Image 1 (cartoon, rainbow, N blue to C red):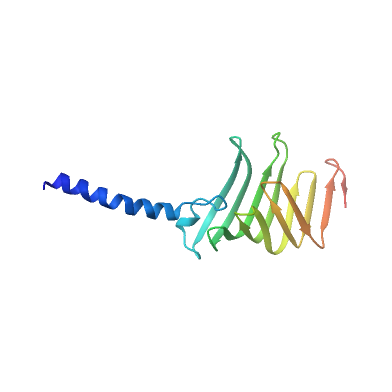
Image 2 (image 1 turned 90 degrees about the vertical axis):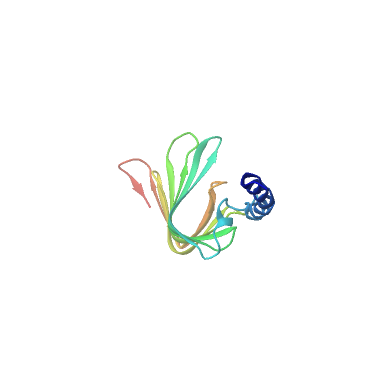
Length: 157
């Protein structure tokens, strides 16, 4: 048997094995793509997770450090989550010290205080938060301090 035929037979024999391994590592519907490639305990620094809707970025999560807990859950620290207004208006930023994120439920839970919600018209500070970038809804737990800005010159607490 010639060398090219032998190589072709080896490739054909190995291909089904490698395809099976890839199928085991593909992301499920409720998992983040690429987490199946990182074993639990893996640490990634300087991450950025954008959320797209109709070819437009609607939200962005950045973190200084992310630790893989499972194929569905990660823990992050030094987090900023940006929620962009659909009309291109004001951006809301959620700042967290440490949190866990579940790709199945699409919920971020803060793990350590403090938390802050920053918007050009208001600022909310509390001890914990649970929110979803997908639904753009959440709850800040207290004690909570809220500051509203009615215009550039007036502030009401």
